[in-house]
Structures are given as structure tokens and as C-alpha cells.
Length: 153
Image (cartoon, rainbow, N blue to C red; front, side, top):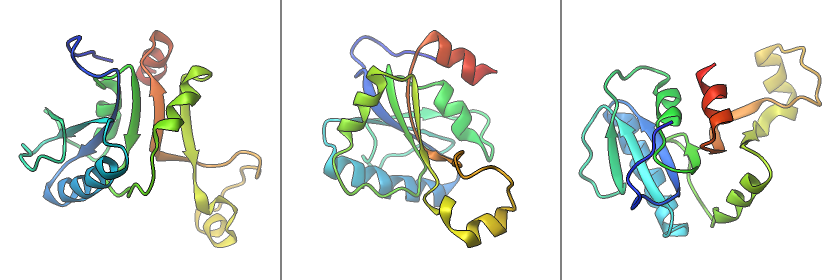
């Protein structure tokens, strides 16, 4: 994981968007984030230069692909990061979530539909109910050596 200059906030939100459609979706999410969390810094990782003002900074994805979020997660400029998929809409203050990082290096939301029988039929999983499916569109994590190794592996 990379760090920015000392003037970079230590806590922030990142998005990864490739292509114009995903970029527009990320802008909408970032605007909803800004509305409810004005003090959180927002970084976009993209293959397109964005001048909308929705993001505090943009980082270029040099080799964009369908799972560019993995690259973005590894290159966060923050000590504490909330990664969000582009299609998220924020409806409240999320800063309290960062308190989880006082106890854990990573926190991942669970799939809301996990208990839905039609979801389970679609995915035909034999995983016990006690092991919920992680929603990799909402990941909160700390930039530690252990996390860097975990992401690298």
C-alpha cells in the first residue's frame, strides 16, 4: 500500500471506476458521500481523467480491468480507508464506522440478501448460514503491514 505526502488526510474513501458509465456512477456515489460526510477525503482511481469536482483527488489506473478495485485497494493513500463500489448511495454519516478499526484491521459488510432463499438458489452454495457472504463493495481497512501482506497474497 502506498502513502501520500504528510498533508494527505489519514482517513478517506476510495472508488475504482473504469469507463465513462462507471465513472458517472462513482460521481453520483461520491456526491452522496460528500453530502453526509463532508470531512471525509475522497479519492478516485480511474482510467479516465475526471474534472467534475466530485473527488478530492484522482489516481490514474494504468492497466484498467474488470477488477481494478483490487489495484485501488492496494494503493490507498490513507491510513484508514473505506472502499466503496461505484453503485453505492450514502444516506447518513459513516464516520462512526472507522471506530471498528480500533479493534480490527478489516471490516467487510455482509450481503443483505444472504438469508433470502432465492439468492441461495441462484448461487447454489453449500456454505452454512453462519458464514455469511461478504459484500466486497463495502470494505473498511487499515494500512498495516499485515493488511498489505494479506492483500498481496
